[in-house]
Length: 322
Ligand SMILES: NC(=O)c1ccc[n+]([C@@H]2O[C@H](COP(=O)([O-])OP(=O)(O)OC[C@H]3O[C@@H](n4cnc5c(N)ncnc54)[C@H](OP(=O)(O)O)[C@@H]3O)[C@@H](O)[C@H]2O)c1
Image 1 (spheres, rainbow, N blue to C red):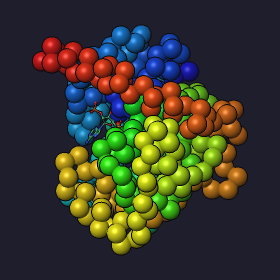
Image 2: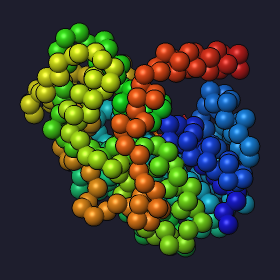
Image 3: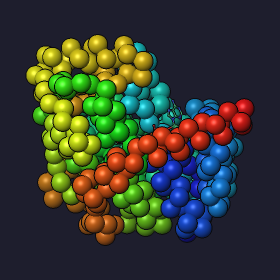
């Protein structure tokens, strides 16, 4: 039984969900964060220790992996500062290399790792390539029982996918220009992803495995954006852009603060984010019946004002903390 865990990326969208499950299972979890003061609410969960740490420093990793039974790595970025692959390499590949080394040095032999569908050293984007290289390091690591998870896009309260389109649709009057509307996704619910992580921790059959995590249905990006538009009753007209206009939109938007869309995102969208045929891994290996977008998305999309009030409250707490 892996009772004492060290969790990297535990303050994010997936991490918070997983932390809640692990805490309910009675485990002790050290969460390493660059900004623990922004996540004070997590301290209220039983068994959770929130620690300020630079996860890119191997000495720090060794220190916090001491006496841990397992490590979970959810750290990831979707954009880098410059479009040259170095940022992705640092956060996805170098960090994974250091985690493997620190596990080895501290005798930790169990590691759960978050990757992504289409992760491959030969993939079209820097993001997917770096995720693929990290997976290769893990699968080759000796004395380490690693499990990799490869989800399609993840939805749920607080996601940055459905919520982002909701925000963009609201501020775009009339015609909404959509890049790469042809790309297919199998959106998977954050609760199902977190459950698979939590269940696999002590599951010996998951050692050395890679799981593809998909929701029950596939949609084109255009269908997803149409669905958000309809759910919110906005009545926008979605205007799908062809390849060259999509690329142009990416080149422009990557200079906008917050990078709503980048050239590397465009390259990632050249491959469908769907599970290989017959890979219903959530059901097959974890007995999880994946939730559909239609059964979950309205529950948070239609209560965005409440969510925003909650976010403001968290920001106030954060200011009080400084
Ligand atoms: N969301 C999706 O649709 C999706 C789909 C496929 C795969 N994934 C993968 O799933 C993982 C979790 O995704 P998420 O949506 O939960 O992400 P998220 O909400 O952005 O959280 C990412 C976490 O990583 C840490 N982090 C971010 N940048 C970092 C950096 N430069 N150095 C060190 N730590 C950093 C942050 O922790 P602190 O700020 O507290 O340090 C944060 O808790 C990622 O690996 C992502 O690539 C996500």
